[in-house]
Length: 589
Image 1 (cartoon, one colour):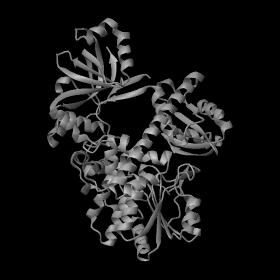
Image 2 (cartoon, one colour; image 1 turned 90 degrees about the horizontal axis):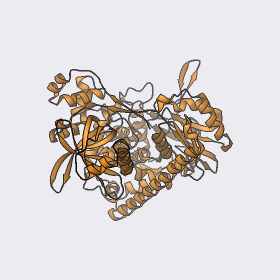
Image 3 (cartoon, helix red, strand yellow; image 1 turned 90 degrees about the vertical axis):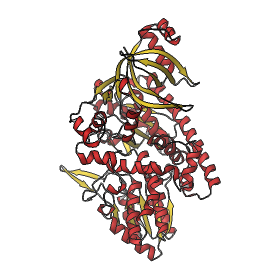
Image 4 (cartoon, rainbow, N blue to C red; image 1 turned 60 degrees about the vertical axis):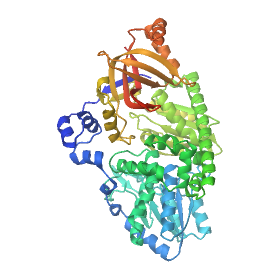
């Protein structure tokens, strides 16, 4: 895949910013590259605390929802939580279940089955609640689009409170956007047009936490008790890929700081099962290790497993459950790897890899991992990709897009191909009849205005930083930017013409190349590259010849050089700390 390297060049008086905040001009430039402009924004970025967050009372209907819930608790009505089955849904459910019980509620929960029930509240779950004498349903991480379902619950005399964070459904009539909000007793969602909450990009678990905060206030429970939910809200924020700026970044910072000391036995067990109990936990560990274990239950089994783990009070039992979820996630990873290989083999063998919009039908793929596979195919080709699979009710699938392709908008142009579809510019889900799959491929490709330049991957470099600038102090200063994630990406630096002085492949997996590199001034440093080592060495041989590579491996001088993008870090080994760079992208000079 072709890469285009671009150097970010946003302007500001970096020396003045550095002086005001007692930081380096490099850190000042990095903050400006993340669209921080005012002193208040920069101060919040560097030093913000949970006390700086907006009042929960600014959320539309949150006081109404809390007042209704308080009355239901006092009247000893039966309350049921209905959540989504992903990390955000399970985390939201955990927060509501614990928070409502703390307030004395008679409450239970239901998590829809991904395959049998589908996403969110449905008629079946409402009928089940009615049969179980449930008086009040409270949704979390779903419900905003359940217009008909909530109307049905109302007709049965039930009370429904919606807490959600997804976009408000709308239709365009004669050029006007008409938004549709369900007729619930209260709807708590910052995306509502008339909601005054200033930060709209919070996840479902944070909405649930803010609702419980207001309810605690009405029940006379100390606000400090809300802090027990920071870790779950943090996990959900990271795993739902919310932007790590503003309020979210402050929350995730606070949650990460207390995660090793969490009172949640199930979460501690998950850390232990993944050998993370003595690690400094970062957003990476939540997004790529802990979160996927919780998601695996909702994908391959039932998300009740994850919820039962989180509310478990027995350490031995919790560890056994955590180990089971970790194994389930390993199974999911193996299934995903196989599915990605099958998808790429299909596209290459049929020539459909040359399409601008990729459509793959994997007959035996588990429908719950179609979206993950679509994401990997999108990364491989840098093209919008749909992965479909056969189910007992026809074909289902998921799509993942690139910046230049508005996926939901393009699907709407061919909506007659689908029996059901939904999504947003970068991702979507769908159901359709199998005989229409080829028609979908042809029409999406015929309609698209994508050009070859849209398939070039863009590598955005923050600053060209020479090796001599890297120091332990500089790396410590960069840690002020953590946690890294969506809209607060880890800084990317660049250096030209690094001479490769030594090279060896580490480990048995062939996924790490260790080098010693020098710049033109003779400054040297260890450099690691994590990727396909065989491909890396083969590419070097194609540029410089086998003799040059053999000389490097023996530690002899050559003129083999490369341009790199990198991130610096400290390497600790047997009590010694040394500087090194981790190479992200490379070009041989």
